[in-house]
Length: 157
Image 1: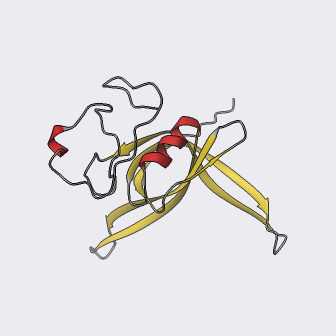
Image 2: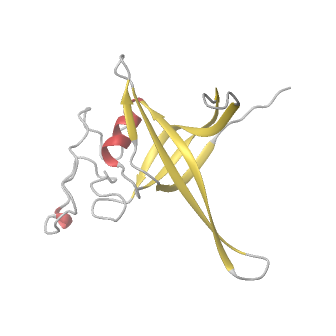
């Protein structure tokens, strides 16, 4: 019997703005980096911190929304699978490889007006937020997705 399971869940902050590309069939792909911080007590009793950097790839409507709402520093929660990319280095002709995460879903952490996720949709997509009415946004909020509006409890992807 063979058992295979490939599932990843990560929460962190984007290390760069997402790069979104569209293919001829109009399917989108977004590439972005995620930094995941871990704080722990070392053997000597002092608090230490380490950061793990992970490349993430999202496809379709998820990729479009990531490109529209997330920017460098934004927090997000990613669920997906590991994928190994292999290629021949053009300069050295050596085999190269890299593991990345292919996202099945991306949840935006933080709401409008919070640092790291300006204009990001929160749990009340499509609803006006009167509490933010008197606050000047740090930058213009991006337009809402053009897909059919999601229900109050449904994310737009």
